[in-house]
Image 1: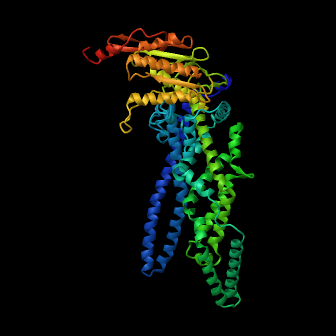
Image 2 (image 1 turned 60 degrees about the horizontal axis):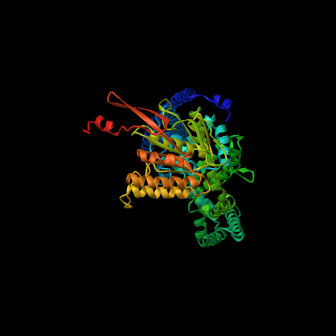
Image 3 (image 1 turned 120 degrees about the vertical axis):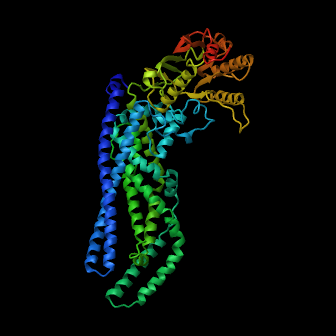
Length: 605
């Protein structure tokens, strides 16, 4: 993204003003619709009691009461019909208020606990998900995710968990840049997607639609149409041609036998209809909104094309099915049921529904996937809009590389974020970071890791500039013991290190982030083990950072020079208080604050 393009985007204060203005508008609109929603609820209740009173009056034999009963009943039904769209608008504007409230919370740094935490996507065996706080309260996923469908959330989570290749990242950059200013689209997807998230199980819906046809062959349609025509002729003959009841009774008997023989296949074809009708209507609304959006980015155009089959929009195809489902429901009407049985109404519609599934059912999974991917891109677009100073990274081919200027952690508020330059590769491949407690060593590792995850997912990064190659990522910042598995913290750590060393032999160069490597053992074993691991990783073309309190480990940099370099974080004790600048300095730290911290909290040491 060019600098001139970035400068056209509203700054944090600008997006805050936009969100605040729209929030006030939505609150006003919501208050108005809520007022009418409450008033109509009260009027409906009064109308119901009026219907009851008129019914009692009419029951007592009053012809005036009968007239009043008809009028009040009609009025009550009219109120029911008028109230439902008002109730829906009140609910829609409430969700719009929530949408902009959450947006303001993100811009103001108060988003933790207000969004989707995504803990269902957290796998503790993943090489960096827990270490870099990808999921959970206050996580990277909660900060970024504005997707409202389960598929959208799942796709966004997969992007954070699986680094993309360079061409995919470039396509996402183009799409995110186009979606960044489209606030109206994001709002509409929020309002429609909120219903879809609670109403649709995407896997179950796609599986139902993709089931093989059960009403195949030409014989069944021919028999059904023939019986329907015979039934119609017998009915007309009885009513208007004086044929008598015998032809009608005979046809009805044949219909009964046919219905019994076909019942199992027909039931199988429509067994899940009741559960899926609402899901399909919601999906059609979401697809229709996206179908009316014009896109220029190649990825968005390709996803938009996936929402059509043979030139027909997906929403149109779904609405055709929805109409058939509505007609099928008519057979349950007690007045229409006899005619429905005579005409084989259910069988005809079961054939139509089964034919729809055979024709378009296999496409439903692709439609749901396309919607989810656009939602995930919109989430990155919202993040880009809310952080306009964050640029897209420059992803390059070649040897392992990570060059960042003014790199900061994306989850730390802008006014509190201390930034550092970090350069890894091609000459210096390892930074050995020493420093006292709480000085910022682990935060540096998380900063590098979180920005690498964002960069390789196709999102903007918290830096003035970031240039990197496609990388695999492995970290040991949150390795823990397990009582259930009978594993110590040290055993869990060496297991993770083995996983990361194995990753270094994979197709992508490795970015490793080791926090206090092997600190669960003695200094001699730690130094020998860490040195061997670092040499193995460097031979595999990896790069990364390792933090340590053990100054003997810092001497490994001399052995691995010039591929390794010592850096450190400093602190100062003033008036009994520790002060940190959180700035990375060259060389090895020259003192420790451990004893000072012990004394500061009252320990006699």
